[in-house]
Amino acid sequence: MASLYLHIPFCEHKCIYCDFYSVAPTETGGNYESLTGRFLSALRKEIDVRSADARFQVVYDTVFFGGGTPSLLSPSNIGEILETLNRNFSIRKNAEITLETNPGTVDLRKLSEFRQVGVNRISFGVQSFYEDDLRFLTRIHTSKEAVENVRNAYHAGFDNVSIDLIFSLPGQNIERWASNLRQAVALEPAHLSCYSLIVEPNTQLHRMVQAKQVSTLPAEEDANLYEFTMEYLSAQGFEQYEVSNFAKFGYRSRHNSNYWNHSNYLGFGPSAHSFWSHDEAVGCSSRWWNIANVVEYAHRLGHGHMPVQGEEQLSGQQLMEEEIFLGLRSDGIDVAGFRKKYAWDFLVHHSSTIKGLLEDNLASLSGQRLRLTSKGYLLCDEICRSFLT
Ligand code: SF4
Image (tube, rainbow, N blue to C red; front, side):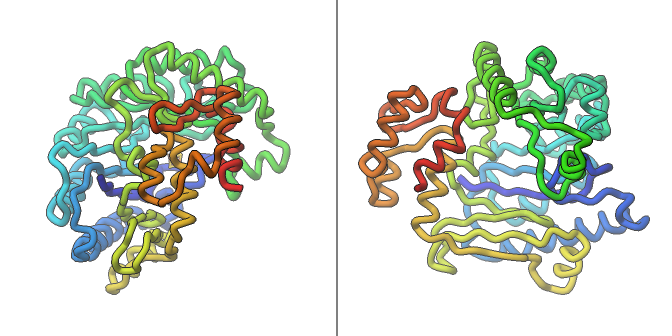
């Protein structure tokens, strides 16, 4: 399984908590239209050049438009990018094609057109159903627009709809969070992603916290909200298959699962990352990432250069550690597969750590798969560290 990721670097407005790379039209000195055009033609060029490398001619199972706000682009732009991908790569017929969508940028017609050009999964950044939360997060949409557009997505022919929510907002209690979860579940999404608010460095939110204009929730309250999330969504028939991700049967995100399974992926666009295992060109696995600047990205491709800003080769040890970390965060570690791949017996080398996790009901070992329990997910970072020391 391999995946393609497209980073669309535009947002109508920069949300206070966000550290993903994007630019708002107001930051382009009145050149938004022409910058979008230059970006799209650079993206086509990047796809052409990468696909000419025989290493990357494998079958791709997923395409993911992320960002940024991909739904700011027109359906015909998205359709043209998909055509370029299809011309250059072999993409499975039933590939999962996801579009991250800001509910403030679409309506029924636009969603129908996204469906017509081949998008088959929509991921809505709803974040909260409370207007004051949305204002605090400086989202551009209202709760009403979010509800309307999730319903519009079904009318447009999408059956695979995901909703993103953020918990641990300042002052949030269990009742408010429970109400958000209830409203999300009432919209019958196939998938939910629930993230705790993280104060990332270099964000407006970080500056507000530093200036004591905003206080974050204590860790204990954050843990209570997370525990409630896992219990509530499990009772509603959602399977938790990663720390923050919950799906109805058959609706796990294939794209994100590929990341967590350490599958190969190619990323296009400013700031996009790529990972290729057992890369014959460099004799090992490698990761590289593009420059996080759309003007420079377009300039480099326009002058015949690739927009790669950095790369690293991963040693067997690094790969193994990443696989432990990714597995524990998601669907567990296939112990037999691990032994075969790395000639290293995970169960033997970590026997006392694993014994402790099993005794404390933080993990389960079923067949050959070691998987964290809900209680284990609560302590996921700590548990990962205990395997890496
Ligand atoms: S819309 Fe999404 S990507 Fe854009 S600034 Fe807000 S959170 Fe970040």
